[in-house]
Image 1: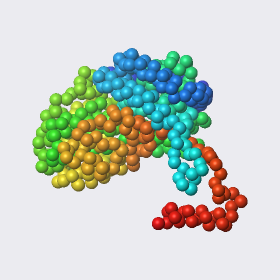
Image 2: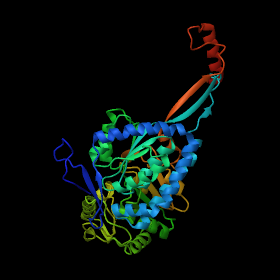
Image 3: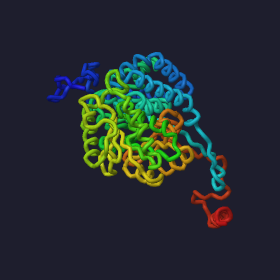
Image 4: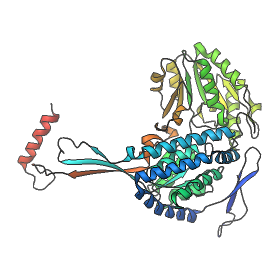
Length: 499
């Protein structure tokens, strides 16, 4: 990503456009505008009009049109995957997989929105039996989505698709590293919604994202990114009391029990740690394996990891964010400097763009390779005496996004002890591919949920309605209330709740 030298009118030195680059080669793959606060405000205003039209269509018509969008995305999978690959450097089949999962989530959200969000009756209780009680989940209006660069389709679509299915309009600010992906997604929906400004993209840097947070008319912000940036987003949104959904990074652990299928566990550890060059917030960064099977498990991890190669035609691509290379280098050096032992790769594996697989064992728990998110192809494997210690260490960081457990007999039991939002048992990252499961974290990994019924409700405002069907024989909420009537009411309460 580079910025041009053309300043914004009246703002000295501020660029008006920027270029997105192929991280594999440095080649320019697109030029995009830097949207300022006025442009963002105008986009939100257009979205407000579109939101009213979209909400009025009702569930059935929204489902039909989102179904047409799903078909359009399927037809364009290869073209969209090419843009993802050009802007992130990931292999084309990884880009296709990302799109396939996003399409499946779009389908689920469109088909289940009415069931999840439609008006439902609730029991009023004995004391309020004269009331008909109902809950309706109404659209917020305009949802602002600030997306990441590592999964530039799948991750933001977890907000975009569900917000649209819930009846909202969306203004999307993609990462400055992957603006072309966002533009292509919005273009694919434009004709299906009669050219209305239902799904717009604003491009630029942090200032553009801040303008989206501040824009009048924004009903909610959904942000994915680092914990540090999330805090700035929350502070900005607090100026208008704009609610936020926050999905930050993780230091996701994997626990390998003594009864685990070690071949499958090793394969999952390597995939979770190395795929997408380790740039996966719910991947695997730390492995805690029981002493009884540690040697065999580590041998299998080493055998698999040594076969992998990074590169333009390798098993995974480059570091999409150049600055992340130094983070990986620092973590590798710290782990080794504190007594860890490299069994695959080492400091020499960390190159300028591409990083070869690194596996380090016996790393002290206070190393930055254990405590901080690496977001690179570095896997730390530590031995533990028992599951209790594995759980204790897994829960020891401030993060709490995803986790992985391999155990034939105790997977559910171990999962229940982990402080995180999602757990994959005898698989890796599987929860992300299940549209009906909520996705999100705790602690430094954020709050709120995308995906599933929880994800649909996240982009609505619940409205409770109590409709009186007939007056109570004893007026309670009235100045006509008598002491005799109150005595009768207390008698009912004692009879019902006091025994």
